[in-house]
Image (tube, rainbow, N blue to C red):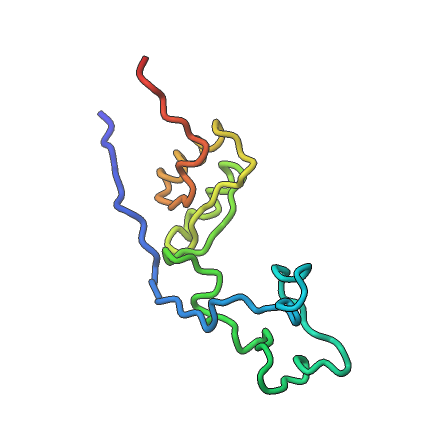
Length: 142
């Protein structure tokens, strides 16, 4: 007889509270003035006379290194793990010794058949998969 061995829920090695110095996105200069750049991403102002670049009083804050995250919590998900994108079953084996630091996320272009294999292998190695239920259909009783 085979003994079934079931491990408990995977918990991160050291759960440090994630503190963000700024959660709001940095606004591009004049994004409030022109509709065409309203929702555009951050660009550093480079003009020679730019009052924003020269950091005049009353202007928007500029992104800089001081807003960076704590080294221990950088790239960390809210669940306490760091994400590793997995494309096949062999990629899961890389996380074997790091299952308390990294969690797997199956890539968007992986088929449902391969997803089942990846999720099965991850449960054997006690690795957390963030999107384990994606693209898996529940069979209906006929």
